[in-house]
Image (cartoon, rainbow, N blue to C red; front, top):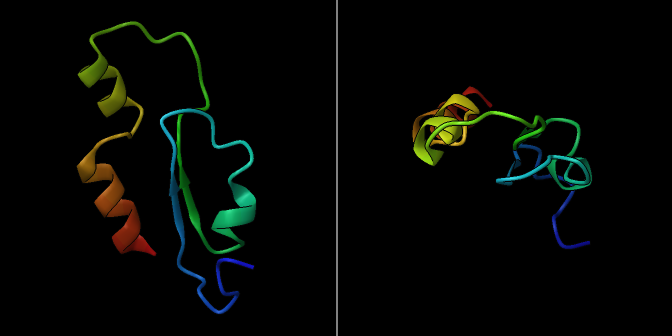
Length: 64
């Protein structure tokens, strides 16, 4: 009820699992999150490798 159904371009960003965010992203939305475990490196490298950086988020948004 918070997000009007006519808004199809939605993006969720979670520095954790994407589980549970599909209901907010909708059928045409994009979910960015971390759905894997076990990578070991400095945090900036891990986040970049997993797509949790500005460049990836902007790119994914523009693709919508």
